Amino acid sequence: MTDLAAPLRRAAPALLGYAAVRALGLVVLAVWSAARGKSAHTLLTARWDALWYTRVADLGYGYEVRLPNGDVHSNLAFFPLLPWLERLMHAVSPLSYADGGLAVSLLASLAAAWGIFAVTDHVHGRRVGVSAVLLWAVLPVGIVQSMAYSESLFTALAAWSLYAVLTGRWPTAGVLALFAGLTRPVGLAVVAAVWVAAITSFVRDRSTAPALGALVWPRALGMALAPLGAAGYVLWVGHRTGKGPLGYLDVQAGWRNGFDGGAAFARFVGDKFTSFPSALAGVGLIVGVGLVLWLYVVGVRQGQPLPLLVYAGVVTALALCASSYFGSKPRLLMPAFPLLLPLALALARLRTSRSVWVVGGVALVSAVYGAFWLNGSGPP
Image 1 (cartoon, rainbow, N blue to C red):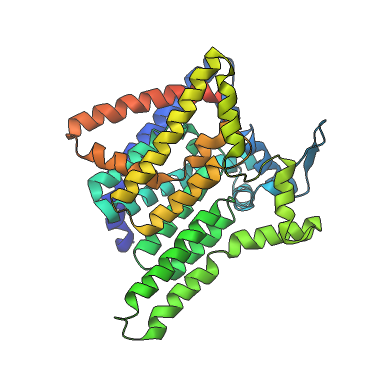
Image 2 (image 1 turned 30 degrees about the vertical axis):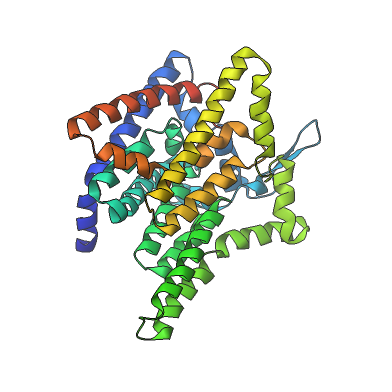
C-alpha cells in the first residue's frame, strides 16, 4: 500500500481534475436529456455498441442481425474483455449487465487517466502530465469515456502497457498488451509498440549488458505475451465460423468495415463538397485530419519516445484508414493520447490561473457538445 500511495498522491491533481471534468459532462448530459424527455442512463448504457456488448455478456456469441441489403452484423465483431467484465460485475453484485459495463467504464476511465499521467509524467514531468489528462478529459467526444463502451478500458490497458515499456517492465507490458488485444482490434497498436521498443532497446543495450540472458528473456517474454490476446480471439473466431485465420475479416466485412488505406474516407470527405452547407463539414473534416497529422509530426520533432510514436501512429492509421463508420472516427482516435502531448506541453507553459480558465472553458464546451451529440447522432 505504501508503494501505491506515493504515485497516487503524485497523480491526485490529475485524477481530481479528470473526475471534475467528467462529472460536469454527466451533469450537463442529465439536464439536457431530461429537457428532451430522454434518459441519460439509457444513452450511456443501452445504445449502439453498448447494446452489443451487453448481449455478448448475457447471451454469449452467436447473435447476428441480417439487414435487408444482405449485410450480416454479427456480435463476433466485438472483442470479449468488456463483456467478460460485465458478466463478472453482474455475478458479484446486483448490477445488470449494462450497469456493470457502465461501472467498468467509469473505473477504467480513472485508470486510463492515471496511466496517461504516469506516461506523460515519466516523459515530461508532473505539470505536463496533469495537462495531458485534462486535455484527454475535455476531448469533444469525451463523453464516450463515461459510456458502457470499451474505449476507456482499452486506453487504460494501453497507457499502462506503454508505461511498463518506458520503465523496462517487459513481462508486465506484455500481459497488459495481451488484455488490450482482448478489448479492441486496435490492440495491434500496443503489440507493435511493445515489439518495436523491445527490439530497439535490446539492440541499444546489448553491448553494456552484464549477461545476455538477463537482457533477452524479459523482453522475449513480453514480446511473446503481447499478441496472444488479439491473436487468440481472431483465431477462435476463425474456428467458430469455419473460415480459418481470416474469418474475423469476414465478420468485419459483414459490417462493411475494413482497411482500404483511407480511400473510402477520402471519397466521403469529397462528397461533402457537392453542395454548400455540407461543404463546411468537408472543410471541418479536412482541418480535423490535418490537425491530427500535425500533432503527430510535432510529437516526432519533439522527440517523443519511440513506443509512444509507434502506438499513436498505428491507432491513427487504423482509425483514419478504416473503410466505414466515418462518424466513429473521433472516438476511434480517442485512445491515441500521445497526440495530445504537444498541446499538453503548451498548456503547461501557461500560468496556472490562465490554464484553469482555458481548461474550464473547453470543459464546458465539451460537456455541452457531448450532451448534444449523445442526444442526437451519437457515437455509432
